[in-house]
Image 1 (cartoon, helix red, strand yellow):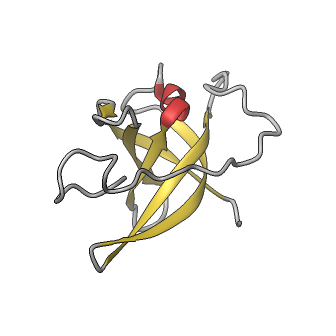
Image 2: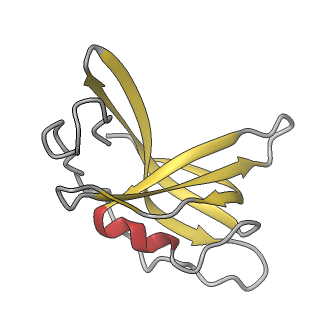
Length: 122
């Protein structure tokens, strides 16, 4: 699986979501520094939600992520799954001790694991 990196400023950090199955996720948005800036939403799942502890809007970060896709009720979804998050800039210590970490497979919850039929399972 390919690994990607994106650098920019944190725009939003959402509260952690916990589903009845115990599955947890937390999303955040990074604004790129491109000529035409883009707001890109990432998610951290399970124990990776801890990567966002101490990160707030305005922080400059480098996100290492992979692309995850799935189908649910004949619709297709793409998620950018962050597995390393580093603060960048003047003297900023990394917010992850993930040096040399490799991405790990993340089990997406099934529809039964998420409360209700109409909820999207991620």
